[in-house]
Image (cartoon, rainbow over all chains, first blue to last red):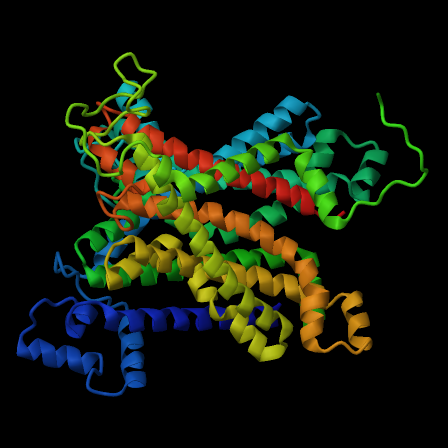
Length: 343
Length: 294
C-alpha cells in the first residue's frame, strides 16, 4: 500500500507541475503586459516594476522564471485582482465555501436518491418501471443544464412563485460568516431569527442543487443498476440465497457494498464534468461561488482571477480524484491484487 | 405463408450483421438512428431548405408565438424572436454550427487521441507512462475552465471553442484507447500472433485494433453528445458563438431578455438541443448493448 500511495503522490506532483507549466505558458500569451498578467497591478510604478521583476525573476531565463512563478503560487500569492485590486486568494477563499456547499448538497442528493432507484431498476421484474427509469436517466443525461435551470426557475420561481431563484439567502437576514457554508452559519448564528434564516437559506438551496444533481444522479442510477445486475448473478449471491437469507439482507449486506465500488470509481471520473456544470448553475442562479466569479472574471478580462481560479479549482479536482482512487483501491481487494501483481 | 426451412443448418451471420441485428431489435436505438440521420441531412442541407436567412428581420412580426398558438401564423412556423427573426430558419442555419462543429471537434480529437493512445498502449515502461499520463493534467481541468483559459488567450468566438472543447475531449480518447490496447495486448491470442512472427505493426493493426474499435465507437458517440452540450453551454455563457449567430446555445442566451413574455425563444432551441443529444445517446446506448461481449 505504501508503494501505491507513493506512486499516486508522484502522479499528483507530476500532473500539478504540468498544470502549472500550462498556466505559466498561457500567462505569457495573455494580451496584456507580462507584469500585469502575473501580479495584477495595472500601470505599475517603476518601484513596483522592479519589485515584480525581482519576485518573478523576469530578467532571467525561462526555467528560473518558472521556478520563481511556482514559488510565488505555492506560497499562496495569486497576485491581486485586476478589476477590484483585492488579493485574489482572499476573494477565492471567500467564495470557495459556497461552491463546495452547493456541490456537496448536490452530490448528496444524487447519492441518496440515485442508489435506491438504481437498486430498484435492477431488481424489479416490472418492465414498465424498468423502462421508465431508463428513459428518465437517458433524458437527464441529455438535457442541457443551462436550459434545465432556466426552465425550473421559470416554473417554480416565476409562474408558481414557490422558490427563490437567485442568490444564497434573502438580503434581509444579516448572518455573520463563520465558515462560509451558509446552512451551517445560519444554524449556529445566535440571532433571534436563526430558524427563519436557516429555512430561507434552505429554500435558496433547492433549485440550484436539484439542477446540479441531475447529471450525477443519472450516472449513479445507471452505474448502480448495471453493477447490481452483474453482481446478483454471481455465485456468492446464490450461496446466500441457498442459506435462506432474506432478499433485503442479501441486497443490503452482500450485493450493495460490491455495487458501490464502481459507483465510487465513476464519481471520480465525473468530477470534471460536474465542475463544468456547477459553473453554469452558479451563473444561472447567481450563486456567489467560484464559478460565477470566474465567469465574471472572463467578462472583465481579469487575468489574475482567471489564472488563480483555474489553478486552485483544477488542483482541488486532481486532489479529490486521486483521493477517490485511493479510497477505491483501499476498499476493493481485487484492485489491490492487480496492483501487487504489476509491481 | 411462414418460411419453410429446407436446410438444417442456419446461416451464420457475420459479426457486423450480428451487431446490426441486435441493434435494430431495439426500437429506441433505431428511432435515435433515424433522428441522427435527419440531423446530419439538416446539417448539410438545412440552409437550403430554410424559408428565411438567419439574420432576416421581419419588423411586422416581432415576438410572434409558434404556429400552434392562436396568435401565431404558419409563415413563421416556430415563431419569431424580439428582432423578428424566424426561429425555425435560425435553428436550421444553426445546425451546422452546433452539430457540425461537434462532429468536427470529435473527429479531430479522435484522430489525435487514437494515435497517442495506441502508441502509449503498445509501448512499455516509462515512455508509455509519460505519453499516457501526459494529458492527465488536461483531463482534470474541466472543459469549462479550459474554455475560459482559451477565451482569455484568444478572445471569444466559435473557432476558439474548437480548441477548448477539442483539448478537453482528446485526453479521454487517449486514455480509453491506451487502456483498451493495453488490455488486449496482454491476452493469449496476441501472444499466438507474436509467436507466428508478426511484426509489431501487423500485431497492432490486424490483431489488436479489430477488438479495440468497439470501445472507441462507444466513446465517440458519448463524446459527440458531450461536445454538443459544451458548445451550447459556452454559447449560452457568451464565451463561444457571439450574439447574432444562430448557434443553438447562443440563441437561448439571446432569448433570455424575453424569457417572461416570450418563453418559446428559449424553450424551442433548448428542446432542439435536448432532442439531438438524446438521439445520439439512444444510438450510443443501442451500440453499447449490441457491442457488449457476446
